[in-house]
Amino acid sequence: MPPRSELYREFETPDLARKTVKLKAFDKFENTTDALNAASYLVDSKLPKGLYKFLKKECQGETLAIADSKLGKVISDKLEINCQQCSRGGADEGLEGHDMAPMSLGLSHSLSRYKLKFSPDKVDTMIVQTIGLLDDLDKELNTYAMRVREWYGWHFPELAKIVQANVQYAKLVKLMGGRTNTADLDFSGVSVCTYRLD
Image (cartoon, rainbow, N blue to C red; front, side, top):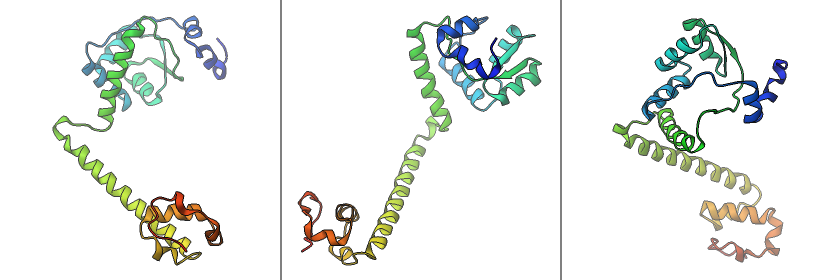
């Protein structure tokens, strides 16, 4: 085995990984619900029952390479299995490519809903959160627009009286740059401008 600092090179491609490690055992989930429950436990660095049974049956006396150090500590404490932290490599030996795509997609959707604390009974919560987010964005945009008017107002105070809309104001400031450029610019490209600057 190479030194620990160079170990990642053995897992750069699936072929290299297969030369380094071999699949000892595999336990398939019965359905997406079981997979989601297991994944949600793992996200929180907890040991699901199915994994507990699998490790107890297949990994006693072995050294387990694991990416999550917190989960590794839980496994070491509960099962007395030696765990070493390592980064994730790529070897999905024993799984067909066409089986993996729908399983991965379904599980990722379910896990995303779990992370968002999605509840089918409270679908309106997401709508309320979205409206709140839009309100926050509105406030932020108004704050930025006020800052642009305030700062550019030191340079060209008359522009605030000429152009009322925030978007129009920002476009004109970007186009003009300095006030002295106003006389030489063609403002016909700024279609949202409703006032003439002459």
